[in-house]
Every structure is written in structure tokens, then in C-alpha cells.
Image 1 (cartoon, rainbow, N blue to C red):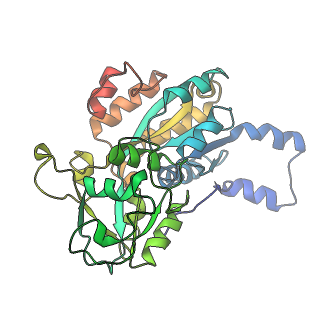
Image 2: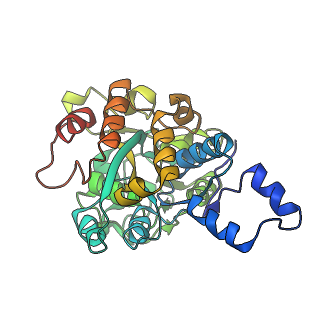
Image 3: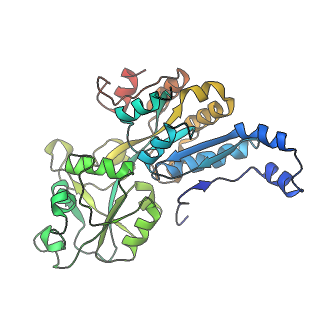
Length: 343
């Protein structure tokens, strides 16, 4: 697997439906219209998309009467569609904001928040880069803060001894949950970033950019690094907090799950509560998603939840618990503690 599908990605009809279409359009218009309720529409995060695509493909093989489409408009763009009743599920690489919950409520949409995996947001350079094996979060802030725009433009400005050569930056656009998470973690404000970099909602475009440029640095979700290891090099990160251990840490299965890697985060899907109750195929798909083998998450490059966390998420889904575990007044702590407190 060299890359993930990008942009709006309609996952095609089941083989049975394709065969019917290939036989001269067999069914009546009313029959085709009746089947539109069996289309599950998903949009949102490009980071979560590989997991959701894998789940959708497996689900359609097991349920040939249902079609699932998976789009990619970024976490924020996806929530916009979700809150306008234009999708059944939103993939999200950050928790829903209170303002988005309020926007959904205008159309009487209640959200069911379901963590599905862990990600380690990965900072990458070109394999020919021999100097930036590790960076501190303070150095990332120096590079990516709004104040750095048109000022911090050379590697030598980040650390003494690094070459006096240009830095070429690649990162997600402002509608991306990854953009917002990175800037919250590094710059202390989800919207605070320099703007003079090559931005794209298409993570494969970011991979291509860094892989083709010796002077490049970029960031995106762990899965896109995992399937492109031969073309990229991950930068080990050091948050310089003694309680988190000494020295830089690279993203990996253990360091992401135990959050010792500084840019670890959970990933989510958000489902429309009313549609879950009224559409059995949507209920069935989400149940399938949450109970799928952990190898499905692993094979696309992400870190599965623990068994205890998976069980708590399934209980949250079974109860159709609405709202977010991350809003004001919500329980704090680890994901497991939030799940226990927010049941």
C-alpha cells in the first residue's frame, strides 16, 4: 500500500448492485429511490479517513445491500456538513467544539461521540536530512508560531550547527483537525500558525512534498508516515518535561498509546443520534465499526484502543450517550477516565 485515496472518495456499490446495474439498469425508478436510504454518508477528517474506508469496505463485503461513501473535507469542514444534516457520520481528529454542538442543535441534531483509535501526529523530514533527527516542542513553536512568518526561514535559525539553508514547510489547511490540534499543542492556540507554508487538506500531497524536497519539514497523522517510511523520516520529539522521561521520543505503538510521545491524541467518529434510531443500517455499521478486529486499525497505521476502552466505547454507543466528553464541565483525565466519567 503506497498511499491512501484522497478527496471525496465514494466507496463503490457492492458487487451485487454493480451486477444489476450492468444488466441494462434492471430495477424501476421507485426501487432505486427506495434504496437511497441504504446509503451511509461519511465526511470529515483526512486523518481518520483510512480507518473509516477500511471499515466501510469490510462492512459492504458483509452487507451487500448497503453502500457507504467516505468524503474528506477536514474535521471542521466535515462538522459543518454534519450540522447541516448533510452526512450521517463525521470523522474527526479532534473533539467537537461547543460551538459546533450548538450549531448542530439548531437543526435538532444530537451527536454521539465515539473514540475509535489513537494517533501520533508525526513531524517528518526528507530522508536526506541528516541533521534534524530530533526537535523540542519549543523549537517547533519557534518554527511554526505566527511570529515566525517570513522571519524563521532557515534551518540554522532553529538550532546552532544546523545548515544555513532554507526550510520548506508543509502542513494541513486551517479546516483540518490536525492543524488545530498541532497548533494547540505547540503554539497554545488552535488557530495560531504561520501562514507561509504549503497547505493542503490532502495528506498525500504533503507526503509528496516532503518526500521530494531535501529541505522540507511537514506534519500529519501517523498512518501516512507508516505507509511511506521508505520516503520519509520521522523526527523524534522532546517536550522537555522530566516526568515524561529523558530525551526525544519517536511515535510508535507503545509511545502513542501511553501518551509518552508528546503529540499523541485520540481519533473519533461522530454519529447523528436521531439517524441511528431511525436507520437500522447506520446503527449496524457503527456497531460493526466499534467491534471490528483491532488489526483493522493496525493495518492502516494507527494504534487501537485498549480492550477496556473499546468496551467502554461500545457501552457509550449502546446507551446512545450524546454530547462530548471534552466540553466545559466534562470529566478530565485519560481517555478511559473520560469514558468512565461520561457514561
